[in-house]
Image (cartoon, rainbow over the protein chains, first blue to last red):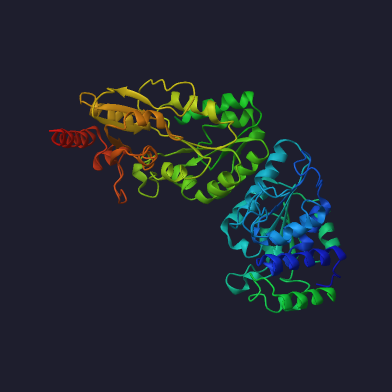
Length: 262
Length: 296
């Protein structure tokens, strides 16, 4: 991970830390893992925060729904949500649940949470655009733990068989599944299942954007090498302790300081 | 019923460019003409039932009217979470059409028997659940509901009840087929009506028939609240739906609490578990005897 963190990546992470501290909720490490992936997807997409239901918009689906806080951070940065609203994360009455709900959050296209669903719905949307002869594209972020689910591979097989080159799968390869069922050599696996596969530094925004803009024959799999908790050494060094945890005031100060020097 | 499904969907596809057919590697020979006429809207997607439902959800999300079709237990039980979340929770519309109801595949054994589908799908908010008993009923229901934008379940069977029934222009209504003033009411749904009618035709009972499990016809059921209600059905789900109406006295005759591990035909299995006309008649007569005794 040689990329320098861009200012927006740092600002989004700050807002996530504040929201997690204020709300008492948060999968911070997994959220920090996917910031550049989501930012790169939206940078490539046709979308307008003022018209989240615009008929010509491209689609983004966070298949690993537990990264919702990271997703909300990006959506707020893009203008879909007020940044201040992030502090309501997970609260009764909030729009911002710990997994995203399309009926509540502007910009969210599919409600996800149970793993292995979002990518499959993404395949259906990509097929819909193919049938309609529409240039719209579909992007989905899938976790490497999520890739334990058989439905992920069913979806990839279908997408490859149909040659859906309007679908981009971004694999958040942060090796979180090393503790149980690791997905080794994911690039080979996605290629073997019929995807056009590219490996990138998952925190290098420009590299991800280039990977997403290259022509491809079938579905594109961007294998993004990422780091859980990217930007804060306390998080990267203790991912299991911080898997689902909210920082105390002292911890918040520490994490903010680490983020400034990242 | 499968031929009617093909005929109805083909007719709809000719008028509605949003109709898409997704098969789980079944009925593809039957749909070959559809495939030739509408190649961009026909997908024999493979033996991947979880993906079939989710892909249909994605199509529904973008305004298409997908029909997903394969064998009952694999599409409803294996893919229950996909139906619950990708269709139900997300409120994406799709038509789920299964074949192999209850013991239609008797000879294939318990892996292919399917009698929980109606019961589990009716639990999903927003879901509509139909069990047509004849090709005519199937045609009417599909035409009325396929474009509703909701998840809709149609349970097809190879065996129709054989009656030409009129259940009104809008799906969801039941119908009284016999009696109306007796103290005992038999309620049933779908193709098993054939056996139920044969069992009860000369007995002093009211006979009520449904082909819509959800939403069920509360008004009609409530008319028989004062009677003893005998639910005779070759699946789970109808009795539970009927009992949405409070303060009923019901008894159920149908699926036992064990796997039906015999082979043969649907008629063999029905006979084994008492859902042949003789078994149904014996059950109803026994309840009639109890009612008469209680009334003395």
